Image (tube, rainbow, N blue to C red):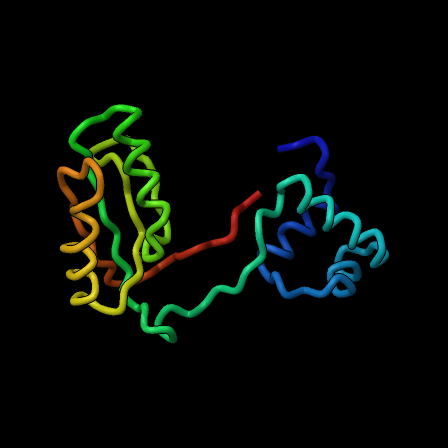
Length: 154
C-alpha cells in the first residue's frame, strides 16, 4: 500500500467504497476533518488513481438483464498476437461486463449479463464463437449470486 495514504485516506476510501453518494460534508464529519480538507483529499485520491470511478450499481433484473453467465474461452493459439486480436474485439462488446486472461483450462473468463437463456443463445451463436481465434467456449449459467461486486478489503 502506498506510503502516501494515511489512516484518514484509508477511512475515506472505505466509506466511499461502501457509499459513493456520501456528500463531502458527510464524509468530512465522519472522518473528523474540515469539508475543505476533505474535498482536497478526495480530489487527490481521484488524481492519484486510488479512486478509479464513481458510478451507480444498476439492479440487473430491473433493466431486463437478470441472467448472469460466465463463459470460459479457449483460443486456438496462445500467442501474443492472438491474445491481442481477441482482446481488441472483446473490449468493444457492450454485453461483456468483465474479461480476464486466466491461467488454467481457459485462456479467458467472461462475465456476461443477458435477459434470458434465449438472449444468450443468440449472442453465443452470432458473436462469441465468431470472435478472433476462439476454438472453444464453455458456458456456466449462474443459479444464485451469493457475493457480487463486494468492496475491497484493505
